[in-house]
Image (tube, rainbow, N blue to C red; front, side, top):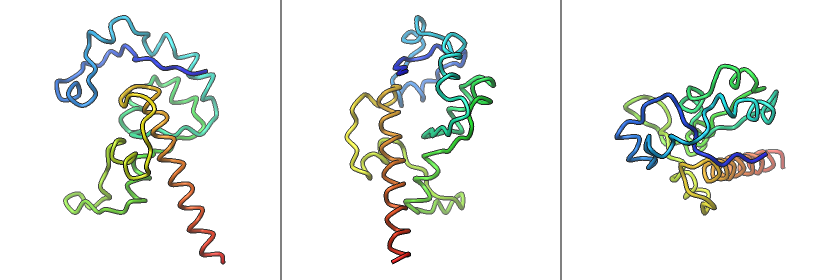
Length: 144
């Protein structure tokens, strides 16, 4: 199943959020709600490892039923931050990068519009696979 749709949320869309992703409340009025697509999502992710670019943010948008159906969740944004290793000295953590910045680093050319389901999913997948490949290569070097 491929779901490439905006979702009508109960959450207000702030002006700052609109500037980032270009989505307004008017654009989502006729889109399905999370309740309407919940069973489809659950059937696809049930007991699976789910990778989300900004998991902390996105998980808040999903229903408890959807979150509980996932086998496990990884945050690609946090993993990329650790992989890149730039320290944010103000917070004492690794600096976070936007999905667009991460894509530029791994050489992924977006095949869909960022901040839309398909474009973001493919971009997240490219970043995750890049990290997996790099980590695998580093392990192989250590073993040889």
